[in-house]
Image (cartoon, rainbow, N blue to C red; front, side, top):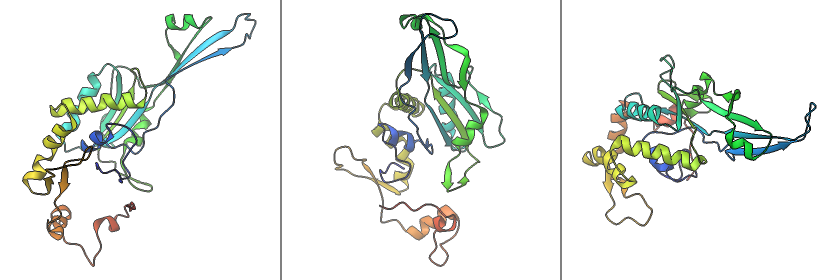
Length: 251
């Protein structure tokens, strides 16, 4: 998942950390500037112009593993985070759990002067909220039109300061806290030790700068690994991704 050629790669720092933890949304959309201030001309008998400020929050939806105990720890940490609003459920029929604050997509406030905007509270009556149906966006996409429903569906909205990159930075910090590490290399060691012990991966003793120091062990018996994963050997040269019509990503 941490390879740059996968379809799950996004152009943000820290993204490989999220992917390594199994936090892989189908898309990350940048809504643009968080704050937009506009001045409108007088209307409806008003002689003075009116100023309007709109705040738009970024949201990321992702499906997490139901079997991984770290998934619950991550969601709990997000629910406690003061700058995050969370909506989640375990599987398609699970009970919906939400943070104390509703998931606000956008909110506005108006004042007679630009300076007056800072003292004016956001108008909740004019706010745009995410509906529970947003959890459909959290389902991992298997292939065109086919989604995985049996997962921990999570929608997270960033209510703090900063753009998408700052949002991702906060999620990375939470995952580091879940695994009790301080940096990416320590996270690799924490997650990868079981694969290293099974000799499915090996450590590159002389990695080049900015490259991941853990490599797949190409000397493994591929047929044996396939059978362990799928419970049988490939039939007539067909692999599992052929059978479920997974998208092939050109290298």
